[in-house]
Length: 232
Image (cartoon, rainbow, N blue to C red; front, side, top):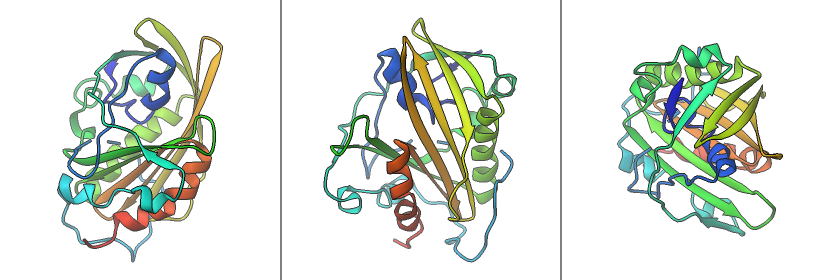
């Protein structure tokens, strides 16, 4: 199955494209716009107003250097490159073909994204994505992606003739927001491996997705969710 990097693998291309030697677009806050199956966990009492937010409003809720602390630098915005990725060995991902596999209902129009590097360690990066839509659409869309990816412990992708093995492992998510999902992805190509943790949290009509080094995702997840649901 051939996909584009902005579709069902959009949450994992951070390392896939790095291992394949490709560039990956990074949208700068606050003006940029960028998304993450059955619901994981539900809690009440902390959801914001039911109305979805604009991309500009989401941009104001992204983490910034002041939120992260010393040692972080925002990665410069780059042109988005839509590399084709061939996926094999995962029937659940095959089921996301058609409109869903090329964006479709998973490509929420209201979005914002930012990426940071951290000088405190090798391969220390963290990226944040915010999406807004109805609670039902966010729940189904995000859950569908995480369910598909975690249903296959191992599968393969081909990026610009570079074969990459992907291993997925479902992770417990901290008790935040109304719903949450988390996983570890290990990408191996040419004898090199890269591990990315991805945690998504829905709080009302906003979904926060953090991707990057496991330690950085864990450290900043609560702050990201808190800032995403603040009334602004």
